[in-house]
Length: 141
Image (cartoon, rainbow, N blue to C red):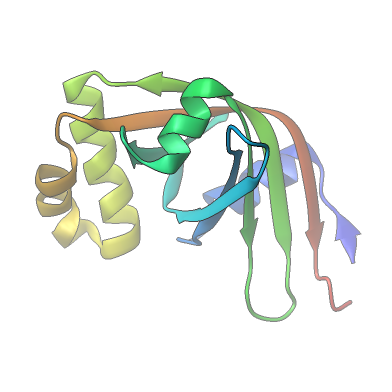
């Protein structure tokens, strides 16, 4: 098992199309964890959500979140990112990121259709600005 640096963690997040597990906190203090598709833009992690979702309400109230991304097959590696989010509702950004993230997970041939279907008013672009990383490579080693 090898501990990752912040740079290693960002490289790991850029590889492949792994599903992230996003943790937010409900108003009553209970955790809320959901899967999210994401992409990396510079030093920020970007994902989308509907403005009326539970995670949207949680992030609006408290912008501190945690995202965990793992490799689900041997040698089992993971990255956990803590930070605060910034919400972007600009229509052009929503459409762009819906297509970009859709293309990452569904293939370039599906990107525009996914963007048209999901890059709509009410959808948010969420930018996670990392403040802390924890990551380990090769958990079985």
